[in-house]
Structures are given as C-alpha cells and as structure tokens.
Length: 137
Image (cartoon, rainbow, N blue to C red; front, side):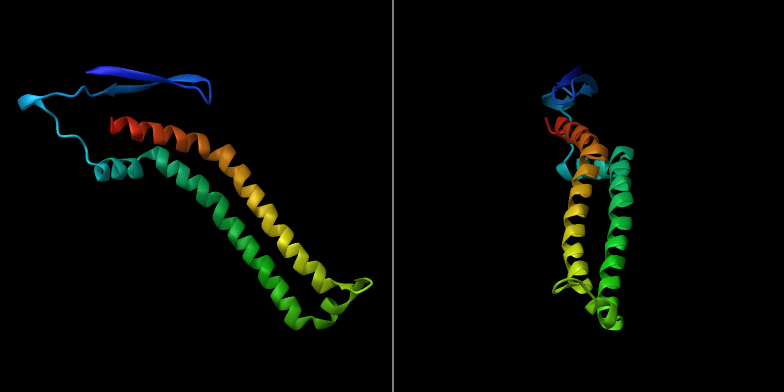
C-alpha cells in the first residue's frame, strides 16, 4: 500500500488522507467498494453528521421564524384591517410596508443562508468530498 497526501490549495494546508490502496491483480485483487457502499459509509460518518447538524441548526429555526413572520402578516391583514390601512406617507400604508418587508426579509434570509454555508459547512463538505473521491481512485 502507498500513502497519499494532497495539498488543499484553496485553504493552504497539506493534509494526509491516509493509505490509498494500490491496485492488485490476480488472486489478491481486492474488489473495490461500490459507489453505494462508499456513500453509505460517508452518510454514517461523524463528519457528514456534523455538516447535516450545522445545516439543520440554521434552516429549521430560520424557516420557523420566516413562517411566523409571514403568518403575522396574513393574520394582521385579515384581523387588523384598520392597522394595515393606516397611512404612513401619502398612499403608502402599513400593509404595503409589511409586504415590502416580506420581500426584504426573503433576500436577507438568502444572504444569511449563503454566509452560514460559507462559514460553517462548505469547507467541511469540500474535505468530505475529497475523501469520497479518493475512495473511487
């Protein structure tokens, strides 16, 4: 067996990826893992579980927050008609302000999601991807 290491040029560090099996022929030939086996192993790995946990830690609370914000808008539109009809500037009323805030919050959540992915998941996912690709070589 030989060992392989690669330089993670994007993040500037060398990492040892452990032994990589050398192809053998004849009766000592090893049957390579199927893609399904590798993906099941990756899915069960602690690294993958950590990536999924970080994803869930952001997505579920943010989804609940946005849903509550949206339902507040809908409920206010149906139950607090006088409040929503109150004019702020000219013809611009509270209902229009709420509606525009819905769009703004959607863009804000998208930006926060992308920022969270870069800071907390992308590097770990890239490393896991490299590990997985090494198994197919």
